[in-house]
Image 1 (spheres, one colour):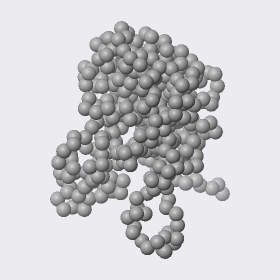
Image 2 (tube, one colour; image 1 turned 30 degrees about the vertical axis):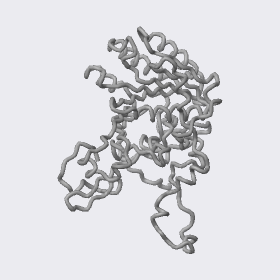
Image 3 (cartoon, one colour; image 1 turned 180 degrees about the vertical axis):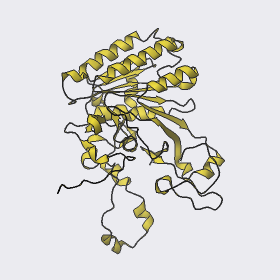
Image 4 (cartoon, one colour; image 1 turned 90 degrees about the vertical axis):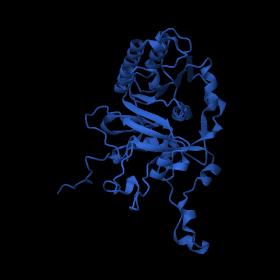
Length: 361
């Protein structure tokens, strides 16, 4: 009699099929895809493994706060730690100066400081602790195979210079650029090094383009030119082992151009700041005082498949743990009107409260 495997719901990702690749910094995904880490373990988990090789990731910026820079820093730093070549483009005059702000992996002392808080909350006598064993660390921590794929990056600890002073880092300034021809040529030259026609995905590269349609660029009012560039960039990425991350401020574009850019993205994210004193939001969410912003996942890359990706949630809180580590958490709805509230991850149905909110739970 044939043995039957474990049944997996079609509505949840089959994480058992996501195995670590033999190459550092790469992870095998479903349907023949390969992942590279975003540099944030929580974001990798949300997306089902990380960013898919050959995909275009677009991040919509918030005009009120530079939270998109946190995602960009971690993405770039993680690639440099894996010795993956990087092409970085920025509207600043000296893009290479930005490399000095990239975070570095936390030391062992930092890892000790990040022990789960539930042990502290138990408040049990020390002589009984031996019966509980060692505290279980989060599956996304810096242990085992996870350490080779995604590091816990300390935002207050700069990356050592030898990681970005090598020839693996190319920087391009798009300040005062009349058009995108120079950047397009540099991207094409970079992507040619990782063509899939050369073989498998033994190596990978990363492209990071910051504030794509910034006012400092002379082409910022040439919307069709920018759309053509992104369309061409996405086409070149499909045939290469590279992940391209582009951030752009949608508020500076016309609604039609912004919608077209969002449609062309394989993975679409947006970040926005939280007002300092939003009393209504503070009543609605637990842990509001620890949040620095919100992350919205609008679209997840679907390569080699037509099956849609169903997420447990689309809105997550952005927090800085110990003011050092970037973490994303599912929003927890506080009890309203005396009803028994529960977190999104633990609730099996809709909230008991009938009070409507603008956030997705």
